[in-house]
Image (tube, rainbow over all chains, first blue to last red; front, side, top):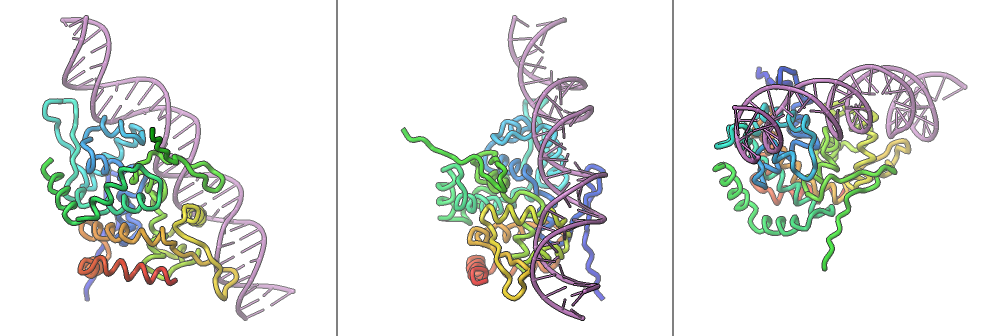
Length: 149
Length: 149
DNA sequence: AATAATACTTGCATTTTACAAGTATTATTC
DNA sequence: GAATAATACTTGTAAAATGCAAGTATTATT
């Protein structure tokens, strides 16, 4: 008889975090289902922002304690990694890991949806049109360029 | 001189809800960036659950007040619509609108990611394999079947 | 007529988020 | 070399969101 085992919790910053179920959607939301995590990932993915101060300066104005908390959680869950800044000893540099880079298609589809159904910045229309011409090619290209950072 | 106008707020249940920016990711998160909204959408998209009681019975155990709140918000934002139950006068039936159906690719990519990087239910692996064989075909088929509900 | 089911609402405790201020380390300016 | 500024945080507290238990109104069933 086969027994299927699921990890239903994980320790993050010494705190036991429960996964609500083994559903892939639910599990993903347990990790990045909040108003801020994907914005940090967005900055790392589509802009050259990669320091604490960079994220703070983003348009949406994340609070400092929330930013520190989310950076720690994203690092714990293996989506981002922290490195020393070459040249600036005081600065840390954050990068997307492969797990983080693999969120590119998720972010792309969210952009498509928003662009189609909400009033967002006009650049999104051009972006969507461009990506839709060669979705796979764009993803591959972006993935490669993110790996090299 | 061209003036670009962005709607930076919306009225939901008589409350003024602010969009944090015109960024498509940020705007999407303002609408469904929480731990519960996408689970309701998941139920409507991938199962035959479509009533208040159905959603309550889902594995993740949403609280009744949160469910009522999210259903109202999702209806306000045009992602779901409420209808009379044929036969049961007491029951309401919720359906995905076209705007909601257009979230299919977002949910699919989230499932792909979770399946690849987290320990989730094994059905996700088979689902991912199946969908990846003909992504566009699957989306079209699911979209059509959801429209007919 | 009484009981049960459905879709909520209400009240309150707990948790999360927002905002302002403070701290420790390093960099820069005078 | 001392003072000021910059960076990446932490801390305290108020406000908002969430979770839980209980209650309510309408309809269905016994």
